Image 1: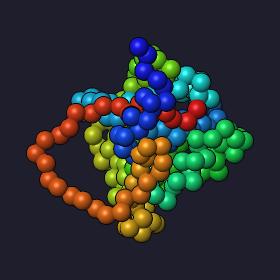
Image 2: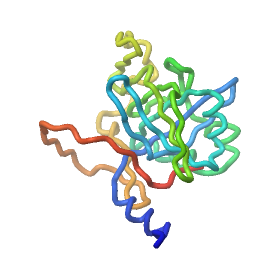
Image 3: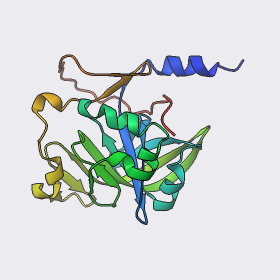
Length: 208
């Protein structure tokens, strides 16, 4: 018996995730969409995975550009997340008026994001009503202004001036998504662990 789609989504929504905006650029055209189906795949080589709806308006540009950036959002960027998850002229014609810069591939890096991964697409696989893209990471960065490029060389901090800590430390918290709603962390919890969990993707529905 087939699993009812809405119940499937409801159950998978119990897996809490961060919120990202996946962006790309090709021949002067910018595109982005809100995604939580993102995960790391491999450390050597450094690979990440994103899942994109087959009906997404961003999909053709991703296939054309062969690049994408994953922008991990802070609690201060919920409005951007909503903007990149709706079908509007603001999104499709004006990139939600989002300030950005570039790192290595030329994909837009949203200013003041919690962190980013800049990748080049190396594989594409069918995933039901989604497309699975595997990207090889060429540069990464976070609010501590550290970037690593493909050959492992650390780039000078001033190259990430747009990610300088203009947000207060208390504001640099991740935007979370759980049971179809946005959530903020209410307190920090740290507990050391000797193991690293296996990585897997989220199946929660994302923007088109």
